[in-house]
Image (cartoon, one colour):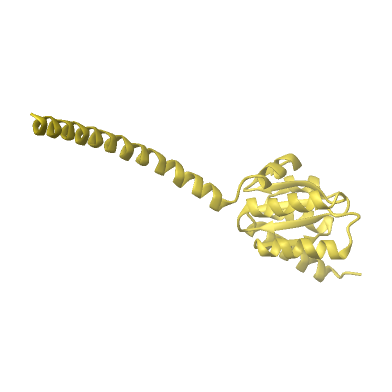
Length: 174
């Protein structure tokens, strides 16, 4: 049996987690074995994301304390939560990949920067390309007009060289 003091410590710890997280994902882990959950924990840890099986009532109290009452709708049945202060796309991608590998694992929903996300939206978030890929695409789109301008300017210079060469050949033959 957990004492009142221990419960208060759990709530305080949960409050800190909720306040620091940029993304909070709730999931139903029913039917998964310990090795699968440990595998998920390791993958999330690589993305600076913490995964924890939560007590629904204590988590609801913590949610009320930090003003995140909208998370309470996910606190039914066996619930685990992931807290990510880092890249939210990377954490959502790990959850998406894991849910594809394990049919019993279902995403209940998430909270991203104070906005509630449905399971479909979490899946869409997980399908966004990594940050590095998006930055590379953006750099490429900045680079393309410059290459076009250089090509146009080279074309004008090339045409001038052809004209001068034609004039030189005409003077030599005359």
